[in-house]
Length: 81
Image (cartoon, rainbow, N blue to C red; front, side):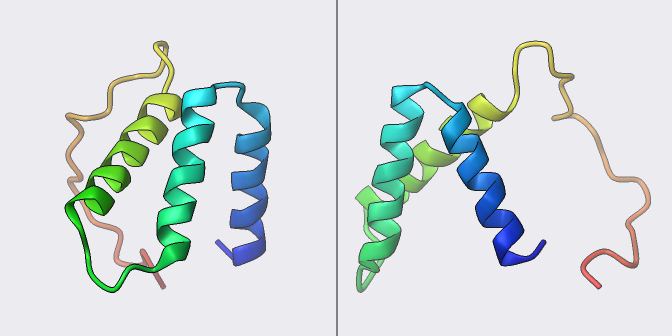
């Protein structure tokens, strides 16, 4: 995925959400990432995990199938090429 496509997808998702909690956490995550702290901190790691959790919860609705137990049986040799 190229950079412009990724930016467009992220902007579309942000524009389409009305969840203040998600938007607040995304804003905080961007602030943390743009601050580029000299070293990793526990607060930084906690914020990243919280943002990942929010995105995970927002990305999959209640009607989505549970794929957590899926196992990759045959790896794709062309993945990432």
